[in-house]
Image (cartoon, rainbow, N blue to C red; front, side, top):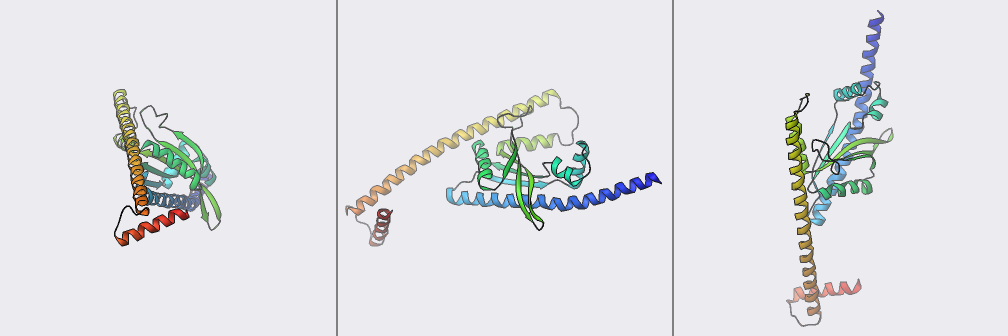
Length: 259
């Protein structure tokens, strides 16, 4: 009878915990929605103003209740909402894939400065890769969410990586999905070599990106000088243009004098 009562209490406790977790998981989903909306606005703004966006795409997820319970058991935490919120930092996760390595740190800086996001933890696996070659920037951040009960700060794991890093990590995960045995040394070596090859590609594309950017800036400078010369010639009546265009140029000259 005592055993039955104990089991019954545990089942009841489990049900209450599940209901409470369902409520707090809404907060984690809202935090991801908030973050994704801000990232999408940033992406569109960059594309419109600079004809370039450092963000390729994003992917997010909230852990299932079963996955959360499994992690609680592995970490030997008590079954409570406080244990979940304080002991598990990756219930909500978002992965931001970008074009170049420099974009990774640029995005991190934007998150801190403009997104009202506080970075609690940072693990830079780009500067210090894992033994198997894995590279990515991992952040644990506090994202503010407004609920009917008040303002809540929700922990979200943010992973930022390049396309090449994401390609390697995705295939590595597929290769070893549900493989719990020790990885043979020769496979670990080949994985590391593949990761190093992806890193070399990242570095090469970064260098090409910088060189092209410098060339574009020089072309822009030449274009600006030509425009100034054209405007000065028109202003001195040394160059005659059709009346409509001349009116437009005249307006530009008047605006420049005012500024």
